[in-house]
Amino acid sequence: MNLYSLVFGSFLLAPLYSGLLNAAPNPLASDQQVEHIYLRSGELPEVSLSADIMYRVLVAEVAAQGGDFDTASQTFLDLARDTLDPRFAEKSFQLSMVDYNQSRALRAAREWNSLAPENPEAKATVLALEASAGNTKGMAQALRQRINSATNKEQAIIQAMSLSGRMVDPRLALEVLEEAIPPELRQLQVAHLALSDVAWAAQRPARALYEARQALERSPDSEAAAQRVLEYGLHVDVETALKETSAVVQQNPDMRKLQLLLISRFVDHRKFNEALALIDAMQVRNPEDFDLLYTKAEVLMRAQRYDEAIQGLDEFISVQSQRRRSVNDGVSNALAGISDARLLLVRIAEERKDYAEAIRQLDLIEEPMLRFQSRVHRAVLEARSGDLKKAQRTLDALGTQDRQEQAVVALTRAAIYREAGRTDNAITVLERANKELPDTAEVKYDLGMLYERQGRYPEFEKLMREVIELEPGEANAYNALGYTLAEQNRNLDEAQDLLEQAMELDPANPYILDSVGWYLFRVGDYQAAAEYLERSYAIMPVADVAAHLGEVYWVDGRPEQAKQVWAEALAQDPTNEALLSTLKRLGVTLP
Figure 1 (cartoon, rainbow, N blue to C red):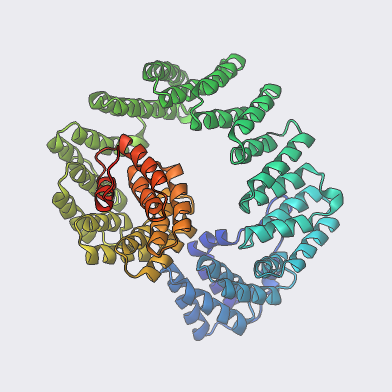
Figure 2 (cartoon, rainbow, N blue to C red; figure 1 turned 90 degrees about the horizontal axis):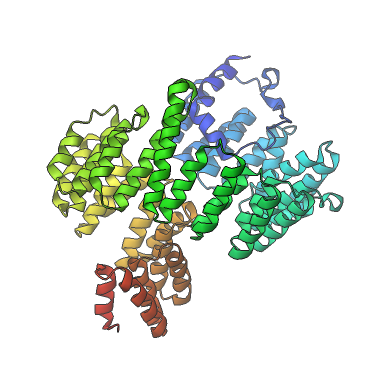
């Protein structure tokens, strides 16, 4: 290996490199590992390690570490062209994807493929990116050729699904995969499962469900297919999906994962009796499955049958305590199970506003990893009991191990003051923490939101922009700043950019859906505004969203719908400030 290779390894195989590999995962790296031919030391380009190359590598690495992926990816692309080393091109591609720079990613991928023409990963990457740009024919043909030539057809179909999944547009990915799978192989179960998953990613739940059902029909004992029938079916017809899955469970009583998933979905749709009946049936077949005691207690708690839940948790703790006495803690998960049960008992006590019992259960937790969390939670409960001084003393007594724990204590202390209505004290705590921990995004975010509450918008905006710079992959700061600009009806172009970024990062977040809806209302697109706000309200039926949705209905000439939404929200939250101010501003009196 030449000197250039050694230096390349020391820089590009550093932690940043291993982390960024996830930006372009290799779906072929499974049973059929693909060897990157160009990585063999004898086939690396013979390039002298000049001071210029060394400097440019350092610049690119430092830029990437600092989040400047634009500079880093362009520098690596230039290095690839100057040195003819494909690893620089691959690195440029990865960083371009992190930076959402599709055009540079394609240029880097083409360079990578050109420099390493025998590397199937490079070829597949180019095909995927070109397909995303509209050239789907080439990729579909290449994937079909790979499937036809493969000895293991099922593995080849899985690889084709993974490669098509790299495409930016999931709808095009579905078209490519459909064309890639030869007609004579379409009846394979794996083909139906692959098409099911890709159809789901393309937001076509009916098609995803159809393919999942076909897979289950061909393999009635396939738990993977049954899980998809349930999950995808819930987005088509809830009752049918639950009924179909219940029938599968009856025929396959050993499908434990499917049964636990079905129990969870029963609970999601408040079908507690059905969930409990399924747990009872599982316990009859597996009386030694003590984890079901905990599962049953969770369901009972969700059903607000607290006394029964407590009884079940006490029994679970008793069983796990016996396991601890008979089996060494180092080879048993009994202590973790007991801790989970105690945390559930804490939640039940909190639901009942029995803070003394919640604190008692926290004090009984022995799990070392939970001690810090338990003490912090204890302080919160002491504050909710009305003893702020005791809560602050509990936080003062905590020994923090690192900057993260310091931040948690500061955020908790501020939250206690905020809940008590002492916003100025909360701001003082967070301002001090922001000076002591200047690169902590969570501190800046909470402090910024308190500034916004006080109408200190310049300070709020400054901190939100700092949060975005520190954590460009987190959606909350984009959403908060975008919503505030929309609410104030200013800088609406920037608000749109911010909210689009938030949506891209967290598309199902009801807070973000509410913000986007409110932005669309501000720009006069009432139909689209109503659609986003309806989606938000379906996920999170709270008064703040109802205030926005009702106002869109009202301005759009749908007063009865507006009044219905407002009335429902007012019944649940009669003192909500946002809703009451909306009704007053619009001069609406509800019966």
